[in-house]
Image (cartoon, rainbow, N blue to C red; front, side):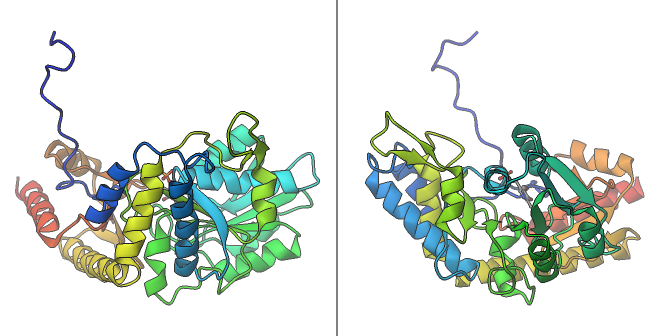
Length: 359
Ligand code: PLP
């Protein structure tokens, strides 16, 4: 056994063969800012005012990304926390004792955690043939106890955008709140024709994660709300802190995420993110075609995620070869064109696919 401190420092995972993750290399400015603000705690803004000021700016910058003039919110630990908070706010603001949340079956599993910890019934509706929320199926599951309807702007498995304006109408008709989960898609969709943000629909809350396509350091999620009422519904008194109230789910949290989100947005919005999106989309289109000509069934990419139906044996062999891969719930291989994924790395992957075919 080696004495503490004498072992060689372990290396983190290289991104070279990581094809299915929604995390990526932070932007160099984000990495630097994260280190600089590592010891600050935005959970106590009166004691750590510098990072608190940065956080207010991040929320305003995220407002630019999601087309909201005057957003409120905070930098969460990630999409999971932001989604839990959206459900929590809706539950706390509603009058019912038996609340339910309605969304498509493509919802991220963080909503199952939300339903579990908040004791809310989660009702999932089937998606249409293009993996998008079916508005009629959602409407069928809504009743007087529905406190929240959820739509996704960039699904985890196929990168699809639900019909956000129609879902918002359905939520309003039912007097329910409406949440959009743009955890992954939020930094891609501004460069598309998709109708996904506050300019297109009546949205109460949104998740948009700087630590995914925003290229901030982990942990940096974004919880955006249209009004202070939402944060009030989440806030508790914090008697022993210098600051006297807290709306976040976590208590102490890392200023690294806040500062790195600020640095990444300052460096990249909008041109850097546009470039990332265009590069990712070109790679997705090219890779999808390369897999198709090799005889695989491919789910056409609308955004930079490609799902490919490959046999289990091939999936396992490629994993053995060191590729870090994940599958959709239907079993397809899923490749997410994050900024670290290059044409060279995909060419290496395709060469391994060809080796499998010839062996
Ligand atoms: N929402 C969507 C659409 C996601 O794709 C993810 C993660 O991939 C999340 C929420 C959860 O985000 P996190 O892992 O940062 O908590």
